[in-house]
Image 1 (tube, one colour):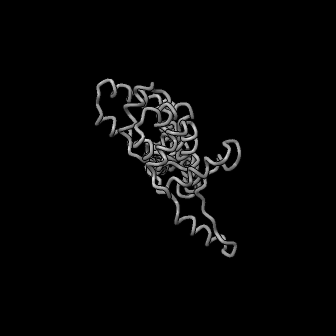
Image 2 (cartoon, rainbow, N blue to C red):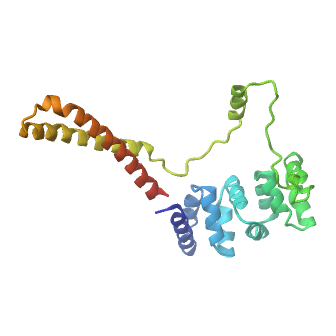
Image 3 (cartoon, rainbow, N blue to C red):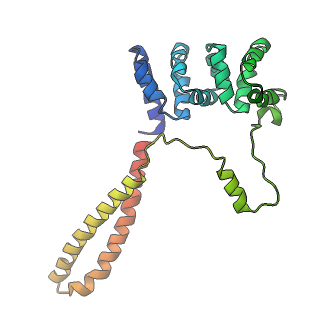
Length: 240
């Protein structure tokens, strides 16, 4: 099953849970998903369904999902939120994403929403909004890191790592499983070769100890490499 089918399946599951009014099930499923998956899911749902699922999302996740939506859908969702809820999402969004949303609001609504956000937190969004949306100042993220010219590459990398986001793991990585299965297959294959090849050479009158050693090693190495990549390809196909 590829990634597109998984996202379609998520939308179907969400629709079924909404039909049964299973808010607990929705909360558990939605808050364990990646923002991109939820953004695609929301785009496939109708307005009434989106209105019901957004209050179930954690604030930071809801802000990330809102940023994943196209401008029209983003505005439709924002219109259905209370100003207090909307201000919380805007505060959690990146300034450029927040500006895209706020720019669609009427002036009085814009000021009310920004008025609910601490001045220091609202300032980056106000700064982006002050520029025309088609120029750099209106589309760039104003939250950036600057470093001095005196440092070397290692110092800069170390500094940047201090500010990295903690990425949540939304998918189960199967590298260990892939390696484990490949190693098991290689061991079994090598054992079979070690048993059968000497018997074959003995049957044709050759010394198994001399003739089979290099052949077994070569065949085992070739099989192990081909087997590992085959398992990796199958695993990736199943997941995505």
